Length: 295
Image 1 (cartoon, rainbow, N blue to C red):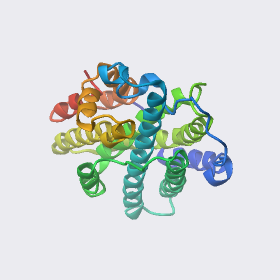
Image 2: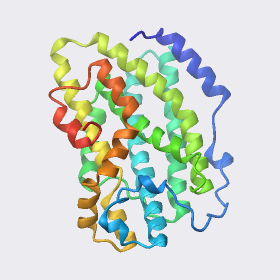
Image 3: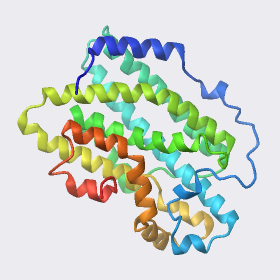
């Protein structure tokens, strides 16, 4: 796959960032009322949709569950944005700051700061806990900015960004979804497109620079982190909000073919890209299968 000149790409992305960016404090009306009866994520994307447990829920409980799953997705997204910012700052730390490449990386950090604030405000506005990942995953996440580098680092970033991006692209045009949520999704999708372009090109450049002995580690790391991301999206604590047994609900969600298909669908584009780039394979295959991103 051909890659454009690094500085030329960064120059274009810097110009685009200057011309079109959003401030969630200004561009979103956080005081706008929520609409009774509307979902917060598309109903078919709820992790329990199609399970025996879901059939026991009333319509009000289903809407409430969608709200708490959105809060989990948004707060897990915020958690990963924080890890992403640490990794980008590490890149800039070792880069000439006068290059457009370093300057765009800093611009992306600024974007992610606003996105993190936006996700936090969203969770606050809908009145849910900031679930975030489970305690174990939160502890493990601290290691990623330390052990992550090269293509696996950018691959991990892309898995998180592109899964969320596809879910948001679907929801932002869905009239059954809260208008506030659609606006947050629209802003994130528009700005995230630049980040995806940057990370994809950096990943391909990194692959061309890797030494042979580094490949097994890169394949293992991107697979393992991807599994952590997909397993973290819905914090099991969210099920308690509608009176479900957390352990049983989590068991049914993980075994739910519809939810597994949602994960595969949301990751189709990035998995094709990572496979063509040479990052999908042993010793990461066990993690890829457990992530639901491949069958």
